[in-house]
Length: 95
Image (cartoon, rainbow, N blue to C red):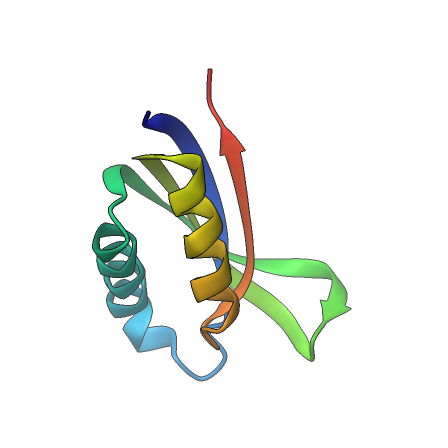
């Protein structure tokens, strides 16, 4: 049974400012390959971290509204943990 989720992904854009749209669309394609339906993508922009994190001072925030089965979300988390362009990710189930 597919459920609705919101995924907040922080991208590592250090030295890659001109390719943000390419990174966002690449992640969207990876989600679709996992069998996840994309409803909406919101670009929240570049924000400075209040703390140093993995030698980064800022990241590009993107919000994905998706529909997927819980097992697909777990598989996506594992896959994106191996992606060097993804700094952090968080998924929340919507009511």
